[in-house]
Image (cartoon, rainbow over all chains, first blue to last red):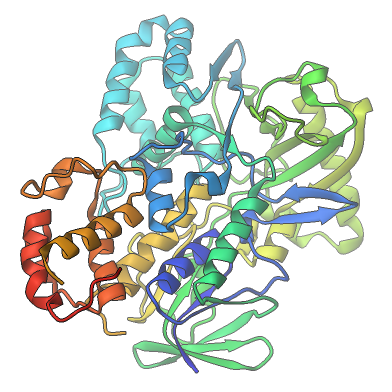
Length: 461
Length: 87
């Protein structure tokens, strides 16, 4: 059978695109190499514990009944209800630099107050920046490139405030070292500070299972353990895919969430040789015998940096311990016990080091570097070491192994393909290299590209 | 289908696309976008829902007729005259 569309990758963007196509009666098959769904935002079980792969928090939080904004748009497009994601808001998060802490919640006014208290001279500047952010449409597809560092330097006088705003926005989205494109900063500023953080009690598992159930219920087909080795083509168009097991699946269209570089590698005559991204992380997941709050740690997410300037790039050392993210998934307003205590610590890592380690050195290196990251982090959180009952550590190598994304990069390549087009007229890209990032962003990426190219009402069924 | 039935069909589609919106006060002569939080993605969905449910094909150049409820009803009446109303 020849499908209307074959989708490569059962991550959030692929599944969201699949739902749109299946809903409008297209025949669609999602192919996933791994044994499970989720890709960069998957989940797993280890030593009887459930963990999320990428999820610290869902951004873009909006309470039920909200009619505008990315979350509302997403739910409408997928014909889901707000309750389907069961999002619970955060407690409080903070950005910690030497001599200065900025706290924020899902109430933007609180953050504005914090900024004014810590940087009294910036009150008018910050108000003007907020206005500039409000007036900008980051979703328009043809944008000139603007440097966020330049814009912030124009609007704000205090360089520390600039660095502190860049820290969480880059940490949660940037594929480019040291700077962020202005549209991306606008998206992140809104999603983190103005909308806010939330999480389902069950983690990303809940969202993924809802998506798969909906997709299958609409007649979509999902095949796991079905890696694609090649995209088959005939002159200027794709004809289908060749699986790792040698089977061929024919399709009128192919939508790939594997990444630009990764997709071009599957094509016979790719013209776009853009390199993959290099931004990746190590993350340690500690399970505790106490709730973090019982140990005096009530923050949802802490972004720390131990110098006045925030350096964000592929480090020269295996792990950059000068900065990091501490996530405590228990510290959301669940109103009920949230399961075992957990602390997750994330830091920038050099993919080259982690991918090239000989196997017998890898485990040892993970332990060593996790300890260094932990030591650095203990300057910012209570010492929870004697409460650790389990540790799991993942590196760029882990990410590459389970998602196929080159270098284990989590935010895609620096060059985004916003309209999702490739050299083949019926091969499209969605996901991190299309450019909408994060849990909500990636679903909107799949939806946007499906709407733009695969669901045009004028296209014959 | 007659005008009233078409109106109900459109309201049904709007409530699928935007379930949190209160449609009871909808004014037929006023464009949808002035009364509801609908963007271009939602608007395309209206067109696609009509096609999915009633096999009505609407070319892009005719989209302007669908700006308001009354415009939509007038446009669809001839296209849906032989189609059964959903109960």
